[in-house]
Length: 477
Image (cartoon, rainbow, N blue to C red):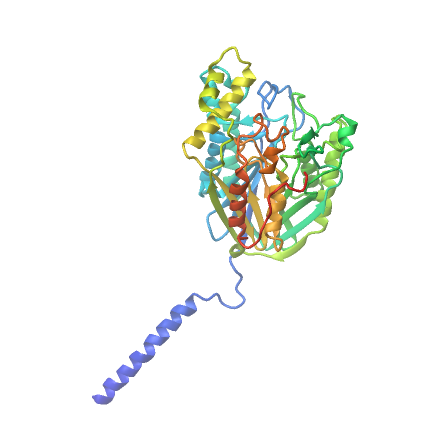
């Protein structure tokens, strides 16, 4: 009997360790078994307005070239991520919220994991459901917005991204490339001897003296991120910072030269291309562009050539779902001191004021009330292995893009701006002391303190706490 008990006890001592070992082994991926793959699906819907529908400044007379709403859905270990770029001048406030909510619901993800940007073409629509509702009370909304058209684009884009998720393809490799684009971008703000803005070199500049000024501070590189299934390319993302218009106010809806370049490269490669405008608030083609219609194709060809060289420079690396993640932070953008709720309401109510003044007042009023209500915007960061893509608001100065790259020189860092458009231009702290259009009350709804807010957000998202930066824009641009 004693021997029987002894054997049972020994058996129990053996069984317990084996149970633990079995549980541990069940969590280990067998040698040679592939990690969970990343998957990508692509969508593209027409975003062109109807004849008579308002563009940013004029009614639509024709669609010279179709506008698009295109993007991709990324599927990994976490909830889906949607990246979307629209050939419109800007999407803000309630329009942006509804757009992101539609895309998020279609793929079952959080709104914060939807990055929505415009390319900022000027012969293209605006979208802002909140300002539309404010103006509707005064009978002014249909002069500025075609909300039924915008809601239809949201509906079709949501259906398309849902299909894209169902048809998503496995991604085995990430491809990265970059190249300089020549004779397209130039800084718009030309400083005089006193350190103030002497000239604003707009994106179509006919003055030969102003065009002759130096290029100034820009980011000359187009960055390219591509997704591959072994040797088969699935999708391409490109990023380049400049105002996108060569000339406008034609009444002909068109995606202008960056859209033309994107379309040309998609045709040449047979691979879906999604292009994002970087921090181009103070950047334009003015040094190289006199506004002549034939110059649009010249600029498009130069951008396309840079995209081609970036494509040819691609270095591929294996990637899995575990290499992808998304982070976001919510920030409050400091309100410009010139914005006064009562004064804006007075302008809006005044029927003797021009319609443009009342529309501007309504838009600013919406932004002020969002701020007073404590509403925050979210800034996102996509991680793909050693790549980071920052998703930023407004017509952002290029110094923010350059600063992001300086914060993490060890990574491949790209930036998409023109997210939340309600802020207008977002300058650097010193930019607000220099004068010029971009940081004037006409153009910017944020205060100089915005630099600290955004740099802090970028530092947190890029995990770059130990990397020091001086004040942005102190190099004379």
